[in-house]
Length: 187
Length: 255
Image (cartoon, rainbow over the protein chains, first blue to last red):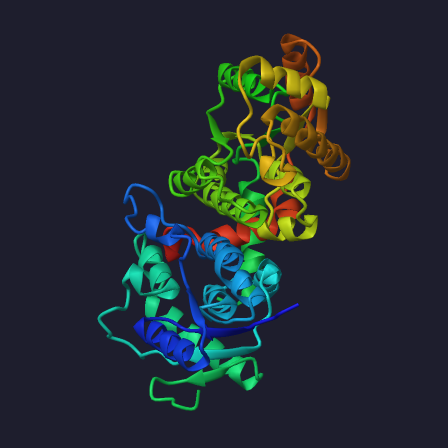
């Protein structure tokens, strides 16, 4: 049975999209991007009358979107022996969940349905002040920051981003990923 | 605040809140079991007894329901997506309606609760442990009324009024074209799951083949005989999760 290669490219912001395209070109594969199911797009105009969803709810929605991507984009491509760049994949959601205080065990169990990638890279993101930060269209983490702050200001977006960055560094130390910057030409 | 201090303070708060809070009563059972009729009668009775009552229906959150509805109409949901979107809808309602209203002293009636997902998603072939994890941390209702009917009765009652919808009939997993035939097959699996859950989670089973009035009388009696589940004992993790991650402002967290 033919079997392709799944490469997870984790991270946030426009750099992730650029690197995903670069990787896909160099590896001769395709990209599976966040929100292919358009769940988050449909939620982008939040009715200010309704309370913001919690981090746990947002992670459940991410998992639903990932299930969609696996069914329609990732598994079919792998079955045809292709390379798929999943940008982002499981670890970005786990990083956000951990940053928001959700238990690792819950997160790991939730994403059990996702195929294990053969390699995992993490796109180093900017430290702060970028124009795209806080925009729901800029990626899952920014979507979450924007939504969590549409309610009462319980969440500090900058602190969430910092915790996500720490998670990536810790994952790299455990050899769970390799952190890349946009100048990285080794791939 | 350290984690152990916050846990200790929450435990004290839960004990203090116990007498002030409302009850959570879940109505469960297959389609056509008459639970909505009983839920309405029960709500009227509770109100006549002087309680403030709030109803939370399955898949009804203003944020997530439209997403689910559109995807159901397009028949585009896999069992995993079906489960995860309903879990998100449930979590949102739990955090924004059910828990705040209970905490404020109102009676909350849930027309379907987590057990609906356990029965339906398990009938769709998903593993029970994974489904339970998606709904964790679980907030246990004070009482779960389970309306028990045979697959035949459920099928007859549904067929008398309408044709079952695609997912209701389980056509996404049975691959049967006829919605009535598919419904019969799928509801049999759901009822099997429900019956197992009723034993594991000690539901209060109501024979839904009885007359509407007899069922209503029984529910009132069983409710009056029942007692609330201790928050600190049964629902500590779920309340902690809610207060730590959802409540509106830091000063009300464990204040």
